[in-house]
Amino acid sequence: MKSLYIIKAGSTFATEAQRLGDFEDWVRHGLGDVPCPVAVVNAEGGEALPAPELCAGAVVTGSHAMVTDNLPWSVAIERWIRALIAARVPYLGVCYGHQLLGRAAGGEVGYHLQGREVGTVSIELTPEGQRDPLFDGIPARFVAHATHAQSVLRLPDGAVHLAFNGFEPNHAFRVGESAWGVQFHPEYTREIIEVYLRDEIADFEAAGEDAGALRDAVTEAPFAGRVLTNFATFVSRTL
Image (tube, rainbow, N blue to C red; front, top):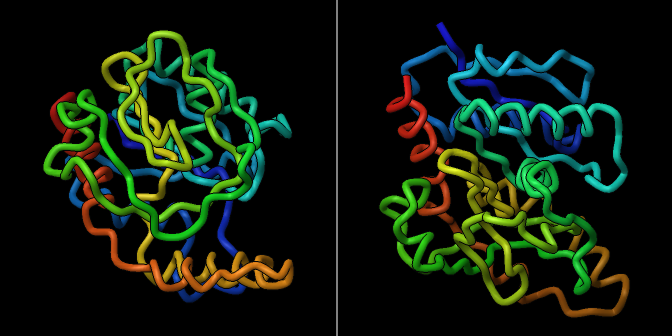
């Protein structure tokens, strides 16, 4: 039987992993019930990626690495994503995985000119996004947790633009009928984003900036989490 693979592209802070779990744990929890085995592959740690024909679907996690560093394990995931697209295997890239999809399909990835986006942010769906199965049951405007320095600066040719906000024009897109990328983190809870904000706020305040608004904006983001359950539902329908 095919498995739904969670491809681990990094780890959270070592000081928090024991208490909160790690990227793959958050994604697995967010997917909910899946009528097929779910397996984790530690790609950053050197584990081999599965052949596309063994995959019911795949989720690539976030990472503290940068796509443009072209690390060997990251370049290998990028090549693998192209094979998944060709085989029409359902794919969801989260943050780093979103950027890898963008570049694998011919888009451009790099540092955002305005710096880092971090915290609980507002997201708006495009008309195409409002009709897309990944955003089923999600309102046209919702909040999500985000933390990233790099972005998909240019979407791949033919990609369907699904979501944006005033800072990040390409918060979600689709390639073909079954490969999605989301720059925000549907797997994050309020507690998780607060951990990431602590370091960012310290940096902002050290630079003399007022980061109080970032702290005040933190809230739960239940609609964002539906992205993972919607993806699991899509995978289920393809089995």
